[in-house]
Image (cartoon, rainbow, N blue to C red):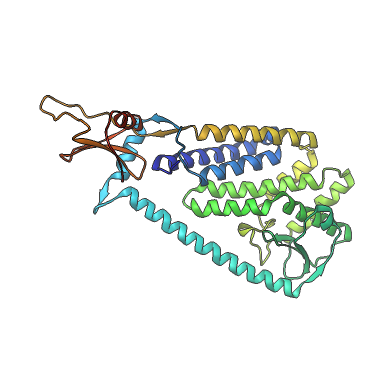
Length: 371
């Protein structure tokens, strides 16, 4: 089990292609109707896990590709001022990741400062719903410092309810919605998506991933809260969503750092929520079937994605009559840090070889050196 240049490439390719594919199918609603909204969350989590664990397993099957990977591998090995382009890219990647980590920490700190001030000035309220949901560490605070409901924290949760003219019925529905987010583990998954954006800050697909995932959180939560509602109750719920949406430009909004409910988003997302609630697309039975189908699909993709890896392959050097015979006494195999193999001779000659060729040479008695 190791991480190589080619294993990272496979993780990026798998994650990016699937994110774009799921996003395209989401617009057509075909995959969502098959797998359910919960199933789509499962598939998106699979994408994040696959990209965050770019390992190469010992039994992986190597698929050589000379046309694309050889020129690509030669390019990253090309040296400029004595440093390979690959190392330069790694340095830029790590520096960018470091900057993103600092920015995320600063955002968390600034947002946390605002939330602590709200907690001190706000009014704690109680609700029997907390016991119904079985959530122990959660506070409900009524405040005039926010215009939209929101939930913050991981482990110790705080639900902020704006001091608007909400009826008791409306407050209860709002709490149902926010507590469902907590019970579903949405804030934890959202934190995982932030980590993905920090690591792959240069990849546009991860930002599309985070935005789509947040919308699926809302769709799933809407479906859970309204699953047993009659038409009149559903109409009330839609009115609350619209009422809150109009107050969406919140001065303490921080949905990208672990806060659910970004009501400052465009109207397309809200329209999608209205359409799904009005059409009652996701029934309970379909939700369970879709969840099972998503688990099977995610497990299958996970196994397939780690079963093979595409990498470069170079033909073994041709030996003429004057060439020195290659034997275990005058040559050895070198395993480089990027995962590739090199056949190196004592006279300084070396050639890149495939993993299969390296394994054959090692079996024939050639020494293996790790570099």
